[in-house]
Image (cartoon, one colour):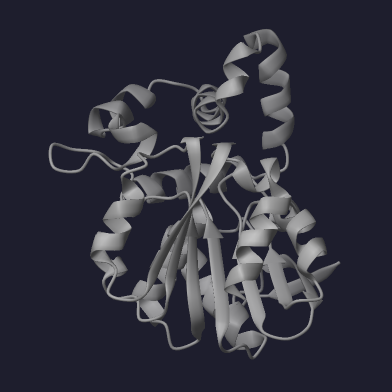
Length: 270
């Protein structure tokens, strides 16, 4: 077990595997670094992989002394890059991790990066009359937030989990809820709530045009949380070489569903 100590004294769990060009991979909301364990094992002879748990998640569950935002996660990433003396980094973020990557670019630019890979994430979660490429394929709006305010946290997480993994709809509620509670036990609820609110307040559409390194978008088909048209939006708004990779027969959890394919597509970029 390795721990990276932040300037504020809190510690983040991380793993540093392999050698060569550095690759940092950031997980999503309620997930952990373990989602990348299988691909890293397949590719550990190809590059140096750094995977870590965000505040309040997994091995970093106790890093919960403050209410973090997406900007906080970007600052944590910057500390890791500087603390480990990294440059020419391939930065990959999935879901919330992609949001953290966008915030990193906004706050620190691309000087330390070699390329950026965003996985199944929109730059703006809330949909409105002009933007339909947000959460739940255009259905999540300010009105949705108001409705959610009356729900308990487990119910909110169930809505997200079913959206991310449609096959969960077939599991009766009395069987599904204990599984979701166990999943949530790996995280600090206050941190999850803070990051969820921060993600929904984000609008990083302008960041995409500020990216100065090659950009790749990995997304699920047919089960993405977002419209497949989002990949074309990225293509139109990127000012750098852009590539989109669709993962067939997948949900938002395509990394764990198809680790071999994920590793194969990532290797092509290294």
